[in-house]
Picture (tube, rainbow, N blue to C red):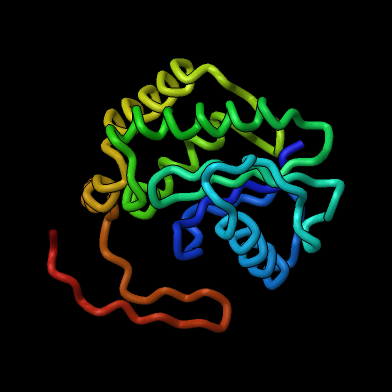
Length: 192
């Protein structure tokens, strides 16, 4: 089972953190620091598997990682997971990000965090691998994008709210609102 997915840059700044096992926030920060130090000090020509750090479970857990340009993709897994299977999963995740963002970079992870989390949830949920077919994942992301566009997306929400208020059929604008002990006086508002 996957216990955590950590993505950080070459300087140790977290770009995506997902824990599938509960850890207190201060312990999560220590795990991130320890994982970065374990992974970043290794040469690029050594094995991409290493024993989990002392904070995340020691020898019962493995850290499996890939280093792409300025980002480390680290999966912390228990002993039941296949190292090569997780390496392949990291590759699928990165290639999916690359297809969805057209040459993914660190800034895409920062400015499109919601989309990155959605893609990750298509791949892994609750620490279990859901999908490894990149074409299926991309199809689901495109479907989500089409749904957002058809609904007007979040950017249209204020306009829809104003339109809904304008279309309300109130006989008159309430001047005093009483809720229990609270009395609210509504100032005179100009009509829309």
